[in-house]
Image (cartoon, rainbow, N blue to C red; front, side, top):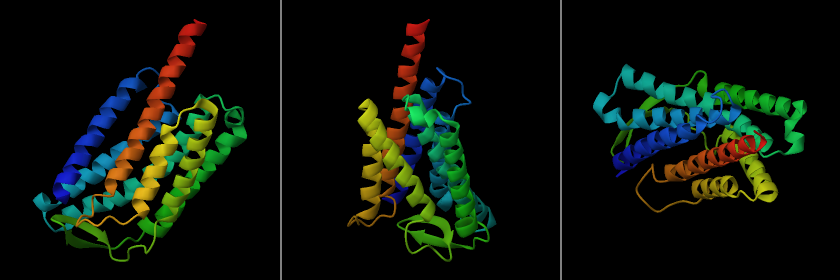
Length: 226
């Protein structure tokens, strides 16, 4: 079952990336809101490596590819903090436009990246694991609870999602984060390690929807002022 789910996730993230980039053409590619696409690319890499595990087989190649999964997770996922800050700025939240708010977002992001690298990535020992028809490499010393980096990113997503809902009536960022959080916490009685990843897909869909929504509003403002 899991191999089909991971294939579905891989296809879904590829479609999400293409769909999201169609709106990115309306603004410069060098915007902080486009950082969400790096997270999507990281998940494409993640699911692609998992799907190809059985084809590659145990050995240094698959181990090296799985090590990439951990690095992309550590480097890309914290970028959602900068995405969130840009979402507030695009929504004309006054305090978010201050240099101090941007500085806080940068420091928060870099702190999360360094923390994840130090605690979860540097010196990582991997071992092969076969589960539900999937072959991949996992940490020999897995964390007993959710990583602190994920928790701190989730806090930012919830806060920013709530602000956007209150100030602009856009609720989907908050709803997507809540769905992902609850889905990750509630045990699902199915023989699958992949089913909960669907909640992560819902979150990224809501974040890309948020970016597209704000890009459209920004384009309308420019046309009105021109």
